[in-house]
Length: 171
Ligand SMILES: C[S@@+](CC[C@H](N)C(=O)[O-])C[C@H]1O[C@@H](n2cnc3c(N)ncnc32)[C@H](O)[C@@H]1O
Image (cartoon, rainbow, N blue to C red):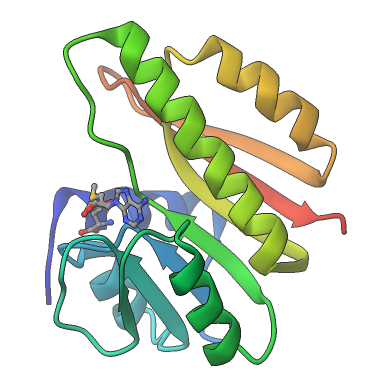
């Protein structure tokens, strides 16, 4: 069992939004060092594939960027069907410059959304992490929000992290 700070973030979100159940097929982007995996297993969820650019000893793990074509090809072989839920705690390397970080994060989040369009089934959901200073990104996502029926922003006091939960993918 790996109990990380991230473990408690997912636990809190799940307790509020009742996101997880054992019948779901899940893709997890940015899984190292394994806090979310531990939480999934604790909830009796084993039907998931985790991906990280860092190496990680785990069953059903793919090493690489989720956006890499080779990884996507592998996923298409492993997955018989599209998944019910995409979880992303992944984040690009941030710098001291907020302006640069905005660019990196926006680029990263666009990749997550495009990835979801490829791998998420109709009526599925995405949970992903972003930062509260991304105005342009919010505009970008507003235009994509029409593809989902429900949106929730999960914020924590005194933290710049924001989790966005998009539910009920309209495909
Ligand atoms: C905050 S950590 C995840 C913590 C994890 N959820 C846990 O509970 O232990 C973010 C992870 O995202 C990974 N990451 C960043 N960009 C990625 C990408 N493009 N593809 C896959 N993993 C990525 C990093 O290597 C890092 O391990």
